[in-house]
Amino acid sequence: MSSILLGLFLISILSSLSSFAATPANEEEFEIRQLALDILERAYPNELFLSVKGNGLHAKIYKKLTHAQFFHVANSEKMPDCAPGGLAFVYLRRRQPEIYLCEFYQEITKVQKAQTLIHEATHLAGVDDECGATRSEIDAMLASGEGVSYQNKYVQKCEISILPSTER
Image (cartoon, rainbow, N blue to C red; front, side):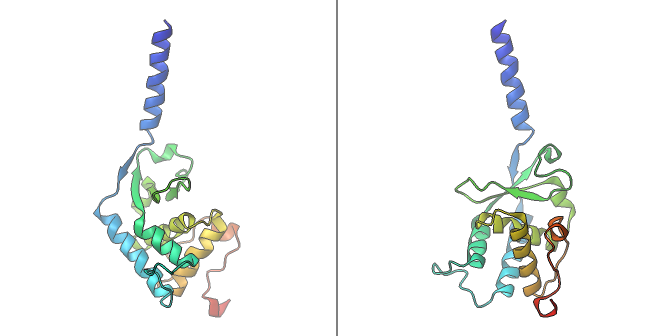
């Protein structure tokens, strides 16, 4: 009897883990990554992104995004970081930078996806609070000339201006 209960317990654990399974990203994600890197290069052309000496926040964001692995989350509505309407999340405890892409991420434009990747790479670069990551994302989009493609839920909550710095 106890072995049956143990077996049922293990099955329930394994099935809950499989509902959060992530699969490696497709070719499009590499194209989106390049777009996000291009936005960062246009936003901060005087920074040494590719140099080992580049230790500022923007250089760290660029490096983390360059090396990040992308994963699509299956059944993402069950993940607290994906629901409701969440786009992506990262785990800061991991050595290899990993960005997990929620199902809703697939429904937005390429520029919106690039903006989202900049936000998540900011977290990977050490900015753990959402207000700081959103400020970084908005600043990069404005400074690049690309413009803000969407406003996440933190723009209003954190009282972030989306006007270019010359108009603030």
